Length: 102
Length: 136
Image (cartoon, rainbow over all chains, first blue to last red; front, side, top):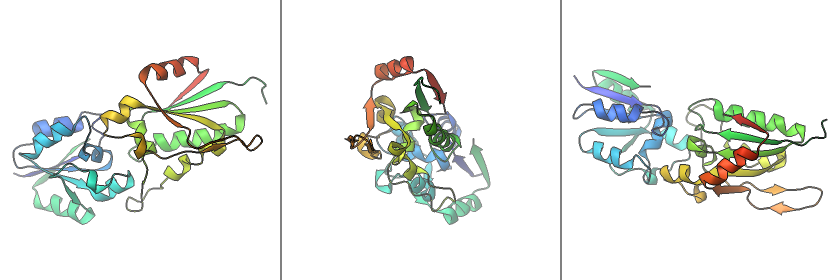
């Protein structure tokens, strides 16, 4: 049963991303939204964690939330895919369920 | 109006948009400007994200309040401090942050950018010397 995991908290304020990456199984999809998008940037303290997870998970980030926070797409970790709201819906539809790491 | 000038410190620790803290803090700073106190703003932890340049909220249906930071110099705010370590762990530098000018209308004294990146020791010192700290 495939799962879409969403993370909406900053990785510097909560352990939502850390737990998500720890418990998401091989091949699962992870979508960073709201303050969760800060984890998608290069040069941060969590970059190595995210990079390591890219090997076994598909990681996505919501474009409108990046834009709102002033993060340009050229500062994203390579391998993270940007999606829009329609892409978010597609991910939810493609997977059997959604687990939100609040 | 009281003759005593107190040092007010607004301590911001939350990212914008994800919660209401950043916006509420800005509201209180703007209201507080009417009281003629010595006002300082400090941004640490995720609070540093509030000052990031180029915010565009057109696609998330929320008000973009980031242009307001650039006007703080007009609201009696003369000092803005940003924690160096908080920037570093988030992959940010001073160049990623907005510049906030300040001008004294009477003396015409001008400061091009009142945003200052400081270390933890200086932040502790600034907290100690403040009369009041407002936490957001």
